[in-house]
Image (cartoon, rainbow, N blue to C red):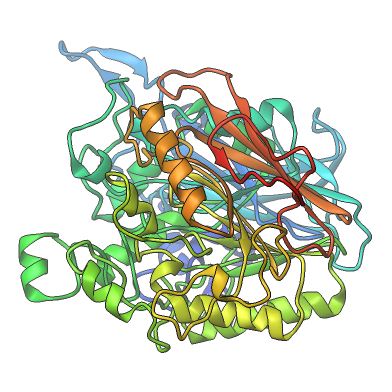
Length: 613
């Protein structure tokens, strides 16, 4: 951080704060030549008199907030030029109704943006404000930190083009409570896996219209790097064509894909209603990412020539830079250019730990052609899902949370954590959800995590997961890592009937739109068969639903965590329909899914049935 300040100190005093105020010039890392922007050079090349007029500019993709602290929050917008559209006869037809976004932007002129935060929606009781510049170097995005705010408090915010009435929509946000504050209740919506071509993002809008949560947790796959699922031509014809219409490789490609997603009205509504706390999954870069590559490319000459036009490192740098430009997220550690893992305390109620089990430092994963090999090494003790540094940090977070007395530990994991039996034969295509790309392929990492919880008596753990495009509820059980096919029943103290011996619960959510095990147009009888089969062969699995897209909401008090799974009947059109797929509770110090006397409250999928509890 010192080197960034040294660079900025060369600027005139008057412009120092305004340029440095836009975090995207310093994010994700000024210490990496591919990820940092020299503000001094950007400011130096700006020519007075070439600035855009306010009428040429617009807030093309709404507003967003995220990563709340007790006294500050990140605010985001995009202030970009709106170019005239030209018809076939060469006539000007007016400003683009959606947005203008293209690599042809070559103007060096900066865009000046003012922002303010107020207690009221009328934006009269201003408590924080500032000015920031943006330019084409960072895709005209603006990301600032609003400070001097009060803990656990709602605020409203707005941007405007400097010295004009060109204003953004008004957004709402909420700060986090201080770690030592007593907090009686906190509510979270949990989302993952939003494929633009396969449906409307209705799920994002439901929590906003209900105003039913305080914060949004996004577990990744905010975008996908290909235009059709698996790069095939299969899928619904609903007019949802992601831009560009090819797989993403360049910085411009990734930027344009985020821009396309941010035209969905329900996604825009969610962003301007709640602060988001996101992490990435694999598709923000490429399918089945790991430390040194992804599905198609592994830094070999052959794969570079035949498959992709860029190297692993360059593609990852392009993706990471676009992600930090477009997402309302803080840079956690300025000397670690791929670190996204971080924690947030919500008073004495919840400690949230967001992991990166994809890109940071994980060992090789399944690349589809090497499934048998990954299966043979899945139980090797030197394999890691997140790398030693992150793993040690994660264990410290759990221990410190227990020590300080937080009631609950909430862990955001991209992939499903719990053991799922991959016994063969299984129903057709069902085995894909048990792939070794999840924690299933990193048995030692999973067992080290559970061992740390058990041996240190760290209770009341809630793991959240996305990625699988299906819904799962499981007891967390320590497996016997010496068994070549470890199962929850290998734990001598675990009773599947009562949940005794578990150390927590996993709630894994389905996708916003991405196809599940039944494809983009699943047949209910097929998905129900898969749900029934999974519950039957997995002792710790309490419920699964393989059919619907949707999301979940957590309502957390000191006494219990209530989790509600919502299903979306159809994502083929923009609508407000949803239904409750299932409701579950975890009660304080029970460390298992609570078994109600009348059975689980589910309206879809398959749940365990107990005669007596």
